[in-house]
Image 1 (cartoon, rainbow, N blue to C red):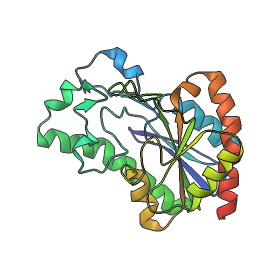
Image 2 (cartoon, one colour):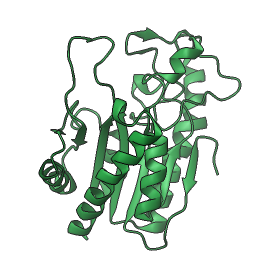
Image 3 (cartoon, rainbow, N blue to C red):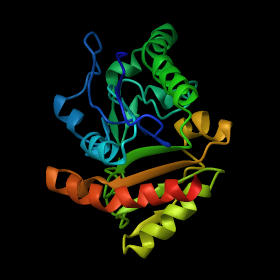
Length: 242
């Protein structure tokens, strides 16, 4: 166990490894973000609904999972290490004063404390378990606070960069099931795909990034409903690639 991640064990020999970069809103002791505590329950701090959904789906799929245990406001683990927004000073229109005050040395210490061990854990797990496909879970807001007039109608979005193998299979399956599915929506994996770029694209390893609209998985009933809908899609996608 490391400070910034929890590992959920799965069935030996599983072809899948589930990764959830934004599963927690935890701010470790000694870090002061300088924000209202109420903001930690919003999307700027975590992907709402992803933690319970990841646990249910990992259990049903029998796959191991790596769940981040630190808020994206402390370190955004789904960013390149040298990207300035890896430690955000503004998120969805809200400033993060505690991060604005960090010196370059402070930033480096925080990245070394959280970003480095998290991605080292993923790399070591991929090398050890040799999954045939990586599966990432995120959630997105119905609309951005900074763009309140722009509704996001998709129920699910599938994101990808260069490797389209799993994405194209899953998009077809989701749409056939009557699920409103975004193809590289609500944003493009060609713009933000850091974890999969690092651990899948570089290895030629297929991956599936699933974004679920957060209002659909904001409670236990929604999590159960979408676990029912998504689990067979993910399983069928993985089987098509094995």
